Amino acid sequence: MTLFNRSQTTLAATIFCLSLLPALCWSAELQRSRGQTVYVPAYSHVFTGPRANPYNLAITLTVRNTDPRDGMVVTAIDYHDHNGRLIRRHAPSPQSLAPLASSYVHLEEKDTSGGFAPKFIVRWETQRPISPPVIEAVMIGATSGQGISFVSHGQVIQER
Image 1: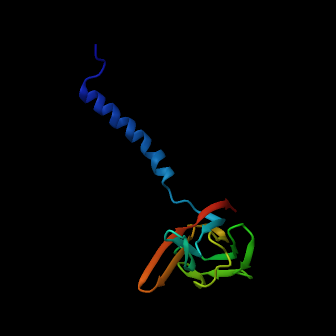
Image 2 (image 1 turned 180 degrees about the vertical axis):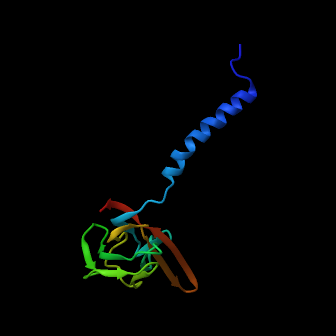
Image 3 (image 1 turned 90 degrees about the horizontal axis):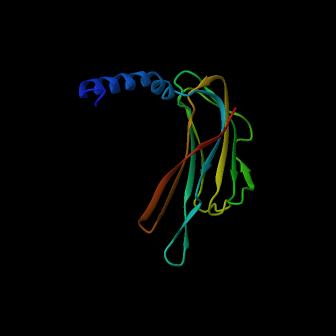
């Protein structure tokens, strides 16, 4: 014995899905923040060929304020080597970024001080909640007419 016919089942499924819509929309709502610590993996070189020869890469870290109304302050950009040891601080004093402004740090191909798997730890803050910045590292290398480039995205490891 069937409790529901096909049209009743379709109607019930539609009502159920519509009842979930507010929850789905809420979860997709723009997340805002007053500050974060962001881990950004980078690569000063990659290994190529059967002998695992290092292919040096330049690294450009970018911090992009995505908020169209409010500025933010980058309080730290720390560069760590593959063992986690701090190599250098690239933002010795806080740096303000206006709405939609960007900032960058560039490391040359010859800078291998971070070893094979360096990383940046970026800290930022603001007085009012804003849309979080996009923080990425772009790696690029070019030798003898060959080139390689790729992007590594930052990952939030702590909310303010």
